Length: 34
Image 1 (cartoon, rainbow, N blue to C red):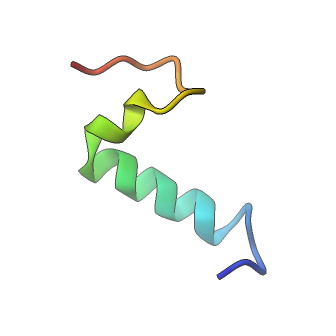
Image 2 (cartoon, rainbow, N blue to C red):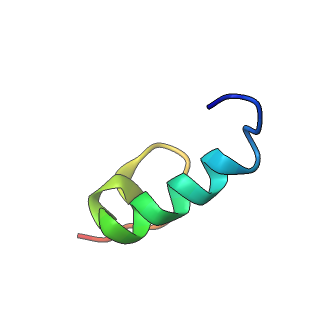
């Protein structure tokens, strides 16, 4: 975890966002799902 910041992390974040729509409230994502 750390060798591929643009590989594993990207896939993990995408999966988390799909499982947890509340994470979309993070500062940086122009997606507002309330």
